Image 1 (spheres, rainbow, N blue to C red):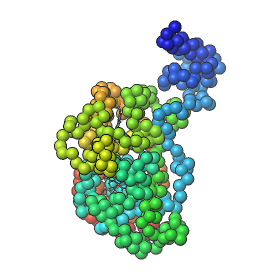
Image 2: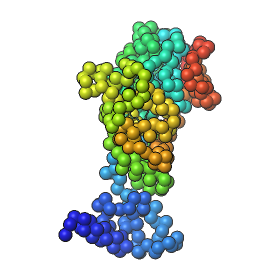
Image 3: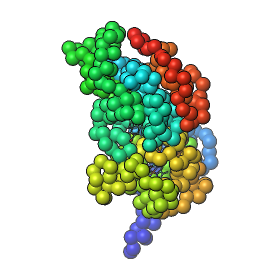
Image 4: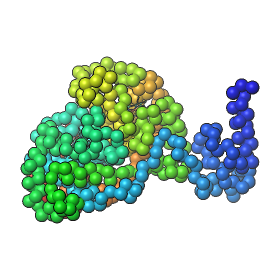
Length: 407
Ligand code: HEC
Ligand code: HEC
């Protein structure tokens, strides 16, 4: 007998078993996707097309389906992370405080607003003095689950990363000595540092550690996480179909794990040459991991970005070339997988990706009006109007007074 015949027999046996309410076939990959695992619960053979008694039990099944073999993993809750509440609170204030930039006009939130999915809606962030950066700003949401930071992975941790923009001349252009001195003049900061880092006071390492602790709290559980935890009704059939497609065409090879990405490097242009098709000059930002290692094999290798909250973080790709999500998905199909996805397939995948949009913990937001809009560029702070057109140069550096502000 051939393996195939065995397969057919097995499938038939499963069918019989399901009807007979035997759990025996559960472990095989043979269960029909999107159908509730009736076999576990139904005391009776499910009467076809009956909306009566046993049907609803399927969704409420006490034994949730086992999702532990899925290539995507649910986010832990913030509570499970055991973060230091005082550092998170101090980090939240620092993240939103333009005191970290040389002329007091830019905070981390200027380019990573929580109201913009933690990313920058402008193709290139505008740093101090209107200087334009050469790469798109990715989201800080769930960044604690990335295996390295930055598109090219040049920072190993959030603590290390947080030092980068502060001193970067085209970002905040800050000077650590001046920042430490400025913070030290503010009694509320002195007190907050003493509580968060007893006996250690204010220093660059503690500033970075507090910001990193806050970033780790930016965890955004979504409906898809509920699904991964066994709530089969948390996502729609269309979203499930999109997820199946995401797996079957191979997106999940790179965009896997807790962050649906963030766990490996991959070459942009695995199947087709991305940069030849894009045209234009190859910039330093395009070199990817090569810029860090000088190793030829690393040319055009990028950290695979997270796809959580992706609908909120356009434009896409390190070079911000894709404005629309369907374009980004089509480009991924073509350049990474050598596969032309149809409009219908793109739509299914988008439906799935939208189920990854999560809730930002309410306590992560700033409520103090003095810090709520520290941003001379687009007004994107809480409660404010949506961002004006992207690419807007920073206008009126509205000398924001934040000294002494508590949250
Ligand atoms: C002027 C705009 C700007 C400011 C201000 C800014 N960033 Fe960024 N941020 C960026 C850009 C652009 C990148 C991508 C740089 C790269 O990968 O080379 C980035 C990358 C990051 C990343 C890496 C995310 C990832 O997935 O790799 C984190 C985390 C981050 N920033 C946090 C911060 C913090 C914390 C601050 C404040 C101390 C800050 N940023 C200030 C523009 C900015
Ligand atoms: C071989 C690995 C690989 C595969 C397969 C892959 N991706 Fe990607 N994906 C990447 C990398 C690397 C990037 C970053 C591109 C860049 O640096 O500009 C990316 C970027 C993206 C982005 C933009 C993210 C952002 O924040 O800008 C989306 C959306 C995306 N991928 C979706 C998909 C989908 C959908 C599929 C399946 C059709 C897929 N990817 C397949 C590696 C991969």
